[in-house]
Every structure is written in C-alpha cells, then in structure tokens.
Image 1 (cartoon, rainbow, N blue to C red):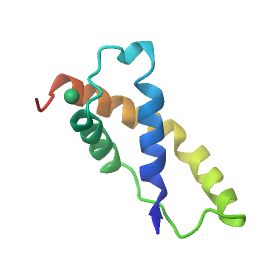
Image 2: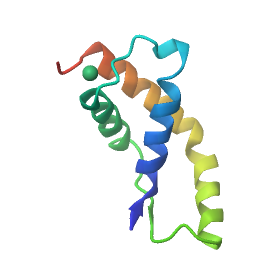
Image 3: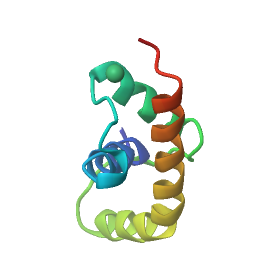
Length: 87
Ligand SMILES: [Zn+2]
C-alpha cells in the first residue's frame, strides 16, 4: 500500500522550490521534511494498492481534483517553514 498523496506532495515540493518565488528557500532534508509533513497533515491520504491499469486512471482523476489545493497548501507549507526554520 502506498499513500499516493505523499508521492504527489513530494513531486509538488520539488517542482515549486525550483521556481523563482522560492529561490532563497533552504532545501536541506530537515526543511523539506518539515514542508512535506505540514502539507500531508492538511491533505487527505489516498492509499493505493497498485498503480496498474484501471487504478492509474483513478490516480489521474484524483490528481486533477486535488492539484489546485495541493499547490496552495504546499506553497503555504514552504512559506511557513521558511519563516520559522528549525535550524
Ligand atoms: Zn534547512
């Protein structure tokens, strides 16, 4: 079983921190984990047993539904961690 939300959150973080807006953001493991935790605590978990065939279609539908929320939450997570780093 895989929490698909976790995978998408990590991809979204990797995409966002490359953008100009987040240029000064610390990308050490601690900060990235903090961002991931913040976002995952605010998004529904989506457990998937397999990624083949029909399930792949469901994953794509799920991604389209949550993508906008995902970007908003990850953006907030990055800003929050950046403003209050733990190191
Ligand atoms: Zn850091």
